[in-house]
Each structure stands twice: as C-alpha cells, then as structure tokens.
Length: 357
Image 1 (cartoon, one colour):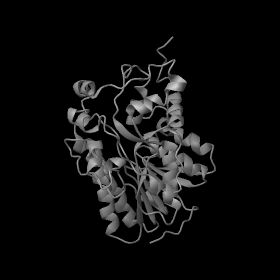
Image 2: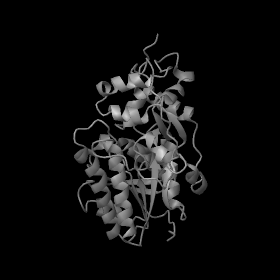
Image 3: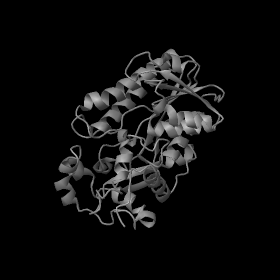
Image 4: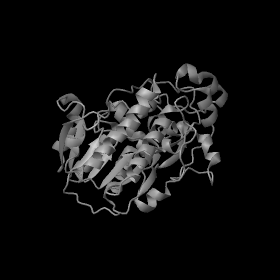
C-alpha cells in the first residue's frame, strides 16, 4: 500500500511537549502544516508556551486537545481529519521503582490506545511511530549474536526484561504491539523510526529527557576523573525530526529505520566537547577503566547494574544506518556540532556552570 500524501490535512503528534516531539512539531510548523497536539492539560499555559512560541513564528498552526495516553478513546477528537499520526509519547527514564507501571504500561498500552483510535479514524493513512534502537538491542554484547556483527532493522531485542534493561524492554513491547495491530488491518501503514541516543538542543532547555541528564554530567564534574567506553549510537534531535517528517511524507517509506548518525561511546561524546569547552569545564579526558566502572556503577546510579557494565562497557555499539541514507535521504550532522549546540543550550539556560576559573 502506497499512501497518497496531502500536506493540507492536519497531522497529529502525541507527546508534543516532549524533547523529540517538540523539535518535530517545530519542523511541521515550519513546513506550514496544522498540528493537532493532544496533551494532558490544554489550559497549562506555561507547559505549552514553547510550542505556542514556535507556532507564532511559523506559517503552520497548532491546536491543543485534552487527552491521556492511558485512557482509551481520548485521542478521538484530536485525530479527526488527520491523515498522518506521529506517535512519539513514551517515557525515557532510567531511574524507576516499578518498571511495569512506569515504563511498560505507558509504552505498550499507550501505543495500543493510539492505534486502536487510528483503526476507528477513517482519515488516517499512515502512522509514524517513534520506537528506538532499544527495540533492536538490549546490550552491546548482543551484536555478537547478529548475522554480520552489526545491528540492522532485521534484528529485535531479545535480551531485555522487566528485571534487566526495562526501558529497552518497554520499547520492544510497544513496537511489537504496533506491528501486531498494523498487520491486522489494511487501511493504514506503519513506519517506525528507531533512533539511538538522541542529543542536540530541544525547544525547551529544561526538558526532562534522560539525554539532558547525561550531557549535564560532562559539565558538572561527575566525570572529571574519566568516562567509560560505554558504546552507544547517537543522533541529533534535529536530524531525527527530519527523519520523522520524511518517513511520513515519502509514500515509498516502509518498515523500520535505524536513525543514528554515529557509532560512539560515552567518552567519545565528552571528547566532542573538548575543543570548545575543555578549558572551562571538567570535561572527561581519560577512560575510566571497566573494573572501576563495574565497582562503582551501582553506587552512582541504581539502574546501572554490574551486569549492564559487563555487557556494555568496552564493547562497541555498531549500528547500520544505510537504510535511512538510501530510502529517506538522511544527512547526519557531525557529532561535534550536535554536542556543542546541546552543551551551549545547557550553559545558556544556567544548567551547566563553569567550575574552572
């Protein structure tokens, strides 16, 4: 099934106040589209001010609707008349007490609620789901079990569970739920965007995404003694917004897309900041040895278990982004540009303060 694209119709974006969705909404508004944004409280002016500011400066328009991710039927009004639905709403938090309640339920049930509404809304022709590379792998060590020693769109995460890497497990369960619902009908098609770690400046400098927490650590002295070679992929949030847009409006787009600009690691992220910020901030310059990370990790962060350290530190993350280059025409920003722009936003908003005289 190939969708006929009509950019005159509104599009719906779930989780519009989130980090990734905010930059996507910016892109959609700049392209002149009307965005339907279902939110918990449409009257919360302070929470919506970043989105309203964007709309004021753009040719597009935004309309807010009251909705709750876990309440069946609550997206009906917002979805009416939309041809494209972007489902981005899903929590990205690591430090949790109840993984089922805090991660899996919102991710899986939320996806089910949105897609069951899509089934009831005749105008919808395409859903673009923000999944994650976490639905492709749980630990870097998993790459050793892949066909050619690289993560591709054909690979699914089979190593995560409620007990181990519950965030990755939640993303896997949500994406599987989406494909199951999609395959049971033939009116609308599904494209999933699977980003690696998202970095780069958001529309709200005080976003609660885990990405912000990580990048702050490069400036607050947390990693002054060194950073681990914990392999990760990284992608700029602006490139990710572009990928969502292209996935929605390229009729031939289909299946899953790994959206990742760089195979890197945590130390590598820090080193991208050294040239510009190394003389003013305690950016990590050295590798923290694996044995030390293994020893200290659970005391520093309860979610960072020794099993996670064993399966990820000093093990590279190797992802294949060639499908996104080939079919979506992606061009990824340099890592240094993404990291510098992100870090500068944190400085400008006062969240990172120079500790060096």
